[in-house]
Each structure stands twice: as structure tokens, then as C-alpha cells.
Amino acid sequence: MSEQLNRRPALEERDQIAIQLKLQEEMERSKIDALIVTEASAIYYATGHNSIMQTRANTAGYTIAIVPAKGACTIICPDFEFQIAQNLADVEVLAQRTGIYIDHYSDLGIEGSHAQRPATVGATQGFVFALDLARSSKANCVIGIQRSLLTPAALSYLEANAGGATFVDCAALLARVRAIKTPWEVEVLRTGAQMCERVMNATGRELREGMTEGELMQLYAINCYKEGPGVTGLSDCHSFGTLFSPAVVPRDVRLKKNDLVRFDTGPEYLGYISDIARVFCLGRPSDEARRIYDALAAGYRHAFGMIGPGVRLADVFKETQEIVRRNGLPDYNRGHVGHSIGCYKLSEELPYISPGSDAVFEVGMVMALETPYNSPRFGGLVPEDNFVITPNGYEMFTRDPLQIVEV
Image (cartoon, rainbow, N blue to C red; front, side):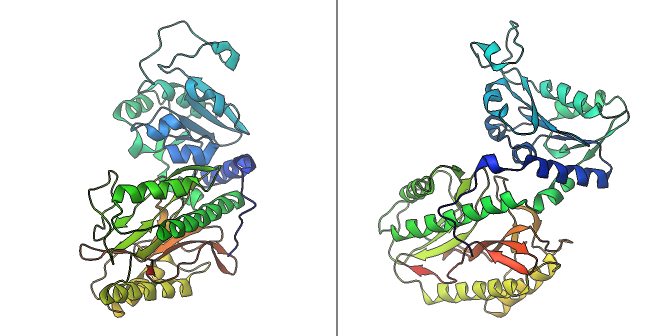
């Protein structure tokens, strides 16, 4: 495991051409002529533009990426974001009008208008440009869309103005391409995971009796941002005492002696998430909690004994769940024991280490392995780490102590 405290990857080192070519090679195999990409993390993946407005919006269309069969990708973004988007390497940028007033508009180098601004980005506004660009490659083209994410208005506009184009869902294509990381992505995810491990250990050392859930969440966030420039956000999916359900708004509870605290997920680095977990106890965990954790750790260890290039994810799931059951949790029933990670905010990306997966581990996959347990008697227990598949096996980014850490 490599610790790189003095050398962190920078956003400027991201290789847009490498990602663009990966997408275009998969498009050629799938016989798709263009992609219209509308989900925030997929837009960031395809172009390097992390759109504030699209990330925060509940509907598609604030920012749109077009990936052609050949040549550079195009971003259609709100004019409010144009200053940041125009610095993207190897990407074309078009601005669409928002309700936000911008003085000295001509200084941006984009054409202005004295027409009344819309209240916000229109439901179909960006899709007018996106469809024209997607169809420009050839007549009767095949266009990939993220169908389930489009509003009825946007989908209706595309279908009514198809002009001979055919629309297919590209969710599976995007998942396949995103599963294999570029060297820059591996470095970013390694950095984020190691940040997360330091944050968990630092916060764990500061646990104290009487601490509220809100104080814990605030302390964790402070420790995330102490990791310095490049931290673009954070997620926390923690459990507190016997409350295994993570809170967004902290509850009126306080940490008691011998309570368990599970930390799960942490800082984002350059827009990519970290997703490891650690379990701490403010005092001494019960014998039953130790027994449960040991069963989870047995399955976790067994999984890492199997993982490597060409191994079926479904096989790892089957044996891991069975080992946990044999070691004292006979009813253990999970939907998955791990997943890919990248720049998707939820943290879990395809493929899953699940019984229904037809995927195998491939070189360049960055994954999270986990064997979680939740109970209203104990709260949350889970070992979890991140790793990348290498030609000879895997490289761990972090090392779970595989025990409940007493503080």
C-alpha cells in the first residue's frame, strides 16, 4: 500500500483524451454514434466539468455533455458556469442562458442578448443544442441517452425532433467504461481513500462521553477539510450508538460509555469519493459485538483471498456470504459485498460484488469491499477498504484493523 502525503494528483493532470477515447471505443463496439449525457457525475467523468447547477438540480438539462463518435466532446453549460468550463482541456464549450444577471457579458467571449432572461434553465433549452450536435455526425444516427434521468418534457422534445435519429439507453455503456479507471483516476481514488482513513482515525481519537451526534458530524467534517486543497466535499454515512440509520439532520442523542460508532465514507478528492469504514467503541465493546464483528471479518478476509483478475464477482459474493454465515451469523443476507467507486455521489457504482453480477475483476477496476451488519441492538458494524485490481492481484489503498477499535 502506497502512502503519498507529499505528492497528490492535480485536476490539471486529468487526461481528457484518454477518457474520451475509452468512451468512443465502447460507442463503436455498441454501434452508437453520439451520447447525450445528463447526469452530473457522468458529465464530470466525460468532460472534466463538475457542474454546480447540475449536481444540485433534481432534473436533467442544466448542463449536458455530448460525446461524438470522433473528435472532442462538447459541454453545454449555464452561462453562470462558463468561466470555469472554458478552461477545460480538449473540450468544446457552449453557454446557455440562465436567470442570473452577468455584467460585462462580452468579456466572456460569448454572444450576448438583450432579451428577457428566463427564470431558470428551460426544460428543453439545452436539448435543442445537444440534439443538433448529436445528429451532426450522420443521418439516421443512433444516439445514446440516460433515459431514466430525463424529464418527460426533455424526452418528448428529443423524440419529436429526432429527424431520423434512434435513441437507445446508454447507462450500461457508461458503467462499463467508468469501471476501468485511468491511471490518474486510480491516483485520485487512492489519495481520497488514504485521506478518509486518516480522518476516521483522527475523529475516533476525539470521541468522548456526552458528545452529540451533531458534534460528531461537525468534527468529522472539520477533519475532512483539514486534509487541505483538493477536498471538494464529503459524505458521511455514520452510525451512532445503537442507531444504525445514518442521519442528515443530527438527532438529539449523546454518546454513552461502551457505545459503538461506525464511520462510513468521507472526503471527496477532486470530485471523486472515498468509501471505507471503521468501527470504534468508546470503551469496551460487548462480547456479542466482538463475536459479530469477527464473523464479518472472516468473510472479508476470505474475499480478499479470492480477488484477482478474471475472478467472477458473483463467486466472491457467494463464498463471502457463506463464510460469514458459517462463522456465527447464519441468517446473514446481503444484496452485495462491494462495488465500484468513482465520482458518483452515492458512492456505489457498477459493477457490484453481487450474486447476479456477470462481471469479472479486471485490471484497473477500483472497488470497495465490505461486509456490513446493522442492528437496533448494536448499531452498525463493518470492515471496508478500497483497492485497485492489478495484473498480479490487487493493491490495497487502506488497511482495516479488522477489529473494533477501543478509545
